Length: 343
Image (cartoon, rainbow, N blue to C red; front, side, top):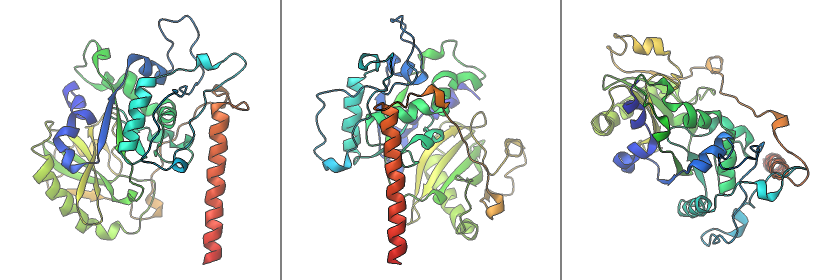
């Protein structure tokens, strides 16, 4: 994989060309200090040890969000405190926080965050509702700081390139905030494999679940994606080999979710890279694969932060977060109970 191919898959690179065919997204450049925070690296201008896991200290004096009802805005997470930590130890990024807060409001009050390539999907275990939905800067920072995928993007993104720049620090990073759509159906997202500028394969994107509707709809899904690829993507994307994730709306439109490089750290999902790389693969037409039954589901990506890495003391940011998660679980259980009674 060439560095130019990897860079072409950055969302801030491809978004302007495909803006009418994708999800509304707003971008924020990331400072070196915020990148160091996400990686848990010490401040080079300070002799203090890096914090274990401090959440950003909320800025004061930010304008409220008049477009949102107060009840829909969760309280900010407090910085983590311990015997040796104080509020002064918590990092603060007031300019970025203010800009992100405005973007969240502009995008309807909830966003999905990602960096140049990856979203912190492997960190959803730490969110209150198990999703990437964020309504505040602190929630975004929590997901990004907890994600192995984000850490890889920030520190090793160019490692798989055969012609990587001698100075990878020249790579600028952006926080991309994408409008959150609660009604999106995961079974309608697909990964498309393009080799030699030809669409050769399509895979169900969420392979950890069996969706009974998919096997019978393959013949309907395939031509929709093929037509979109030939009319919109093929001439608009500069690489010869890559993957593209797309979403099919209920009215048959195709929306671009993301571009990914061919091979490297991109998952082949229902395929194997060895078969996709075979010269004869796809010669007989595009092959589409979905999970055909419960026995065909694939394991999901899991990750975790060591418990002793966190400060969960009374009043800490993590203590408040865990309490919010417990409240969310109780609320969901009550809703299920009420639905059962109503039925």
